[in-house]
Length: 154
Image (cartoon, rainbow, N blue to C red; front, side, top):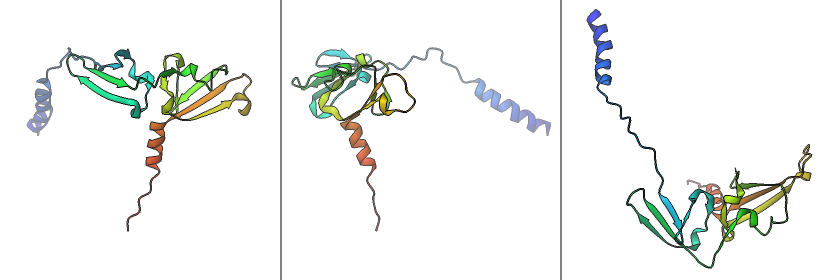
């Protein structure tokens, strides 16, 4: 019985004791993104996929993704959208995500499916004047619509 107990204790320690830990684990590095040869932060740009002319991927180093976008479709800063330029104290929500730094976000206006503006006067128990701008992109709208399909089996 003692030998069984010793083997149950010693065998796992011998097996797991042989595993060498690698202290040189590198952090995950994202590829660099370029839009019409200008470096961009891809998480702060909302593009309409129909306006992408070509995509080139370079695998050397950390990698590069080069997007050639339609030159006739300019990107607009979120704060410069025509429907919100006259509003003050704006909270932006894009695809149900609150945007903390709206001045860093660029959006293709053709990618916007809906813009819903709610004034704080419509919200109960709120004293200050705030405007909530909720934007849904066409990409998110397609995702929502595709999830609403009901399949019947016969």
